[in-house]
Each structure stands twice: as C-alpha cells, then as structure tokens.
Image 1 (cartoon, rainbow, N blue to C red):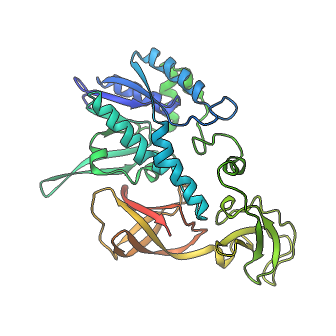
Image 2 (image 1 turned 120 degrees about the vertical axis):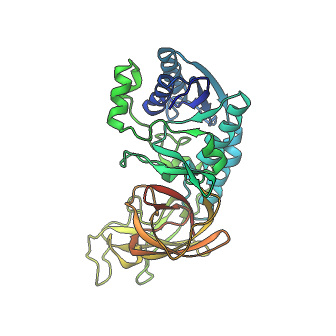
Image 3 (image 1 turned 90 degrees about the horizontal axis):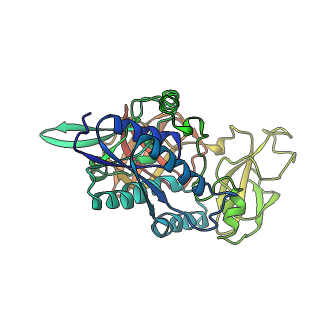
Length: 369
C-alpha cells in the first residue's frame, strides 16, 4: 500500500502490536500520528492499572519511530457507553464482553470521530484482523476478515463494526504473525518488543474480578442447588459472580453427586434462577446440562449492513477461545436469530457474543440470549 500524502492516526496502547502497526504504516509512507486513549479514571493507580506506564511506553515508541503523539481522555464516554452496560448485564445475571462494546463505541466511534476532526484519512489499530474492499454488482462493500495468524485472530471482538467504520480503518497486522511482530519491534529498537501482552478487561486490570464487582453491585447470598435433584449443596454470594461452565470458586468440595457422577467429580455452574436467587450446579465437565445444540441470539449486528441468507452452512464462535463450529442460521427475525449447531456446544453463556463466519469473512453476530 502506498500511503504517500495520507494521514493515519494509530490507536496506541503501549503494547508491541500497536507499536509495530504504527511502524509499518510509517514505512509505507503514511504521515502517522500516535494517539493514546485514556478510558478509565476510577482508582487509576499503579497497583492494578498500568495506564501511566503504558503512556510512557507509547511516548518512547513514538520517539524512536519519529511520529507525533496525542493523548485523549475518553473516560466519560467509556463510563456511559461501555461500563454502564457492563454493570446492567451482570446485574441481570448475564456475562457480557465489554471489549466488544469498547471497540464499537470507543475505539471505532469516539476515536474515529476524533481522528476525522483532526483531518485524518484513516485510523489504524494493532488488532489481528483484516479489512478488504469487495466489489459486488458495482457496489463497494468492506469485509472484515480473519487475520493470517489464526492463533491471534481478533475479528471476534470486532464483529459490531459497520461499513462506515471499516471504510476508514487499516489493520496493518492482518498478514503478520505474532512471532514476526516481536522480531520487527526488536529490529527497530523498540523497547516494548518483549513486553507482556495485556490480558483481561481493561478497567479491571490484574485485580480479583469478584473484589472489583463487589464495589459496584451489592452481594446477595443464596443457595447453590444440584440441578439433578434440587438439593442444596452450597451457598453463593451473588449470581453475578458466576458464569455458565464456571468450575472455580463454588466451594462445594467432595459432596457426593447422583448415580451418574463420582464423589470427586468437579462441580460446574449450569444455570441461574434470578427470581429465586438460586445457582444451579452439576457434576462432571460433560454433563448433558452443559451441552446445547441450539441457541437464540439477540441485538444482531451485521458487518455488511444486511443479514446473511438463512438455512446455509456457516461457522460460528459462541465464545472467543472456542474453535469455529459448523452451524445453520435457521431464521432471522428483526434483531433475533435462531441457530442450530452440527455438534453440541459446551457452556453456551447468556450475555456472551456468538459471531458468524463464511470462510475467512466475519459476517457479524449477536448476544446469546
């Protein structure tokens, strides 16, 4: 790609991926400006939040590459558009994915709007994903693609992006493998070459999740019951602290299960009764209650702007780390669709996203209901 005469603003986090994305664009001839987004201000300290160090790392990288740096505060937008929804979902007993909402509402909306006001031609990020122009019947469509490095592909987190957003977006790492990203950074003298990748939700950092959530949502203890026979096997501190398929943190121990489960089989969260404030658990990873062949999805978002055809074989990810699973979108009605999988899926979780693919093309997705 020839970037001569074009300005691109790169969202930089202080990590190796966004740093190399900026470097590659500079090498392609773009006028590159780095932009560091501050999205969280509550208890912004060094114990759990790395914002201060990340900004120092970004400044160092920009200095080595030879590009300008701007810092912008989107904390208010983040709290209104992402964090408020995060709390509402947990309070309702679901398990949301705030990173997906952060991408569609902050990184590719608030950031994109800001970049356009600064006169940028494009924005770019260090996501492992691709975007391409697809010409169909004289019309240009922007497709969201999986990254070449399948082990790092992040298209799942970007499925809510629309045509306007993709038309202004570059993903410089689309065809680059992670191992090569670190090598490129090292060869360029970027000190972040070996920096550990950040994990988890940005505003929680490395702190214990339950401890964080308790500050915003009050505890509401209740019974843990065995799904198979409805007997009480333990107590929970709040349904919002648990997710379907969860094994750790139940503190049930070696209570003997039913005839089909051994005394020492692990317990897993299998369901929630919000009305009765009861958490249901089963023994054994492959218990039938944890396996589902069907799901309903709501709040649909299609990358192309229109729904794909139904009764066609696609693949889907019902959570980020699961392999693509063959499925059939049986019906789409407004913002709801019904999906049938070829094989039972483990621990389908309300609030998580199911994302659909046709080969390498990400079609869009919705929230598991």
